[in-house]
Length: 364
Ligand SMILES: Cc1ncc(COP(=O)(O)O)c(C=O)c1O
Image 1 (cartoon, rainbow, N blue to C red):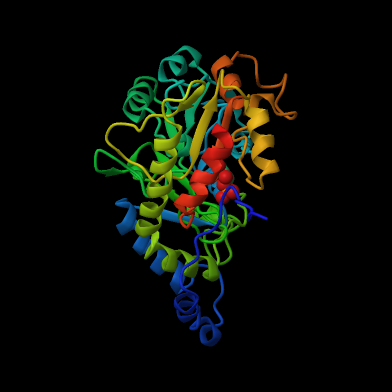
Image 2: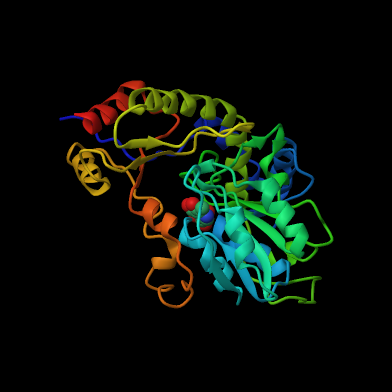
C-alpha cells in the first residue's frame, strides 16, 4: 500500500528550539496581549519583510477585517472573484459593497483595465489578491488608485517572503495582509500580519484589534478581539529562522512539477513573473482540453491516495451567500479558472519521488 500524499503539510521547526522560546512563559505567566514574544516577532518581521510597520493578528481573515475598519471606508470596493471567500467576507462584514472585477488569464490576478471600467462616485477602494503568490499588477493598480483617489489593500495571504524588483511585497498598496495559517509557506499555527507604510492612516489598528480600547478605561472604537497570542508569536520567531530554507525546498519540488508537466497538450502552467522573487506557495495546474477534465483528475488522484485541491472553487461571486446579490457583473474568466484549476500537493519536505508519483498518475 502506497502512502497518502496530502495537498499540504505544515513546516515544523526543531521541537527543542520552540520549547526554548516558550520556556520563559512559565515564569512570566504572560500568554497574550502584546507580550515580549509578540514585540520581538514584530521587530524581526519588519526586518525580514523590509517594511516600516507590521501589526499581528489571530488569523489572516480578521487581519483583513480590522484593516478595512481602520481605514474607515464606505461605499463600493472593487475586488476579485478569484480568491478565498475570506477576502469578500471581510469587505461585506465591514458594511461595504463588493464589486467583482474579472481576472487576467496569465496570472489569475485582477485585471487592471477592467477595474477602471467599474469605478464610479461610490468606489472607495480596491481589494486585490496575489493569487497563489503570483503578484497583482501593482504599478498599474497604483496608477488607477492615484487617479481616482482610492485605497488599495492587498490580500497577500499567499505571498509571504516575496518581493518585486527587490522590494518586499508588503510595501505595495496602502496595506497588505499575510495569512500565517498552519498550511502557509510561513506559519504561526494560526495568525495574520498586516504591513502598512502610513502610520497615521492606521493609528486605530491596534485598538480595533483589542476591542477598541484606546486607554485603560476608554473605548474609542467598536473593535474586536483579533490578538495573536504568545505561543503563536513564538512559533513565528522560530519558523522565521528556517523560512528561506523551506522556500528553497519548495522550489525543488515545484521545479520538478514544471519539468514533468510542461509541454503537455491540455495542461497549462502559470509562467513565472518577471522581477518576482517567488515563494513557491502552490502549484496550480489548468486542465483545459486534456484527456481528463479537472474533476476526473481530482478523482483519479484521490483513488491513488493523493489529495489535490479545487482552489478557488466556487468563484466567490458564485457562492450561495453572494449569488444574485453582489454578482451583477459577468466575470467569465474567473468562472473558467474556478472550474479548470487544481492545485497539486506541495510542501517543503515533499520528496522528488512523491512529485514524480503525482505526475505519473496524471500523465498515465
Ligand atoms: C487568499 C486568502 N485570503 C485570506 C485567507 C484567510 O486566511 P486565514 O486562514 O489565516 O484566516 C486565506 C486562507 O487560506 C486565503 O487563501
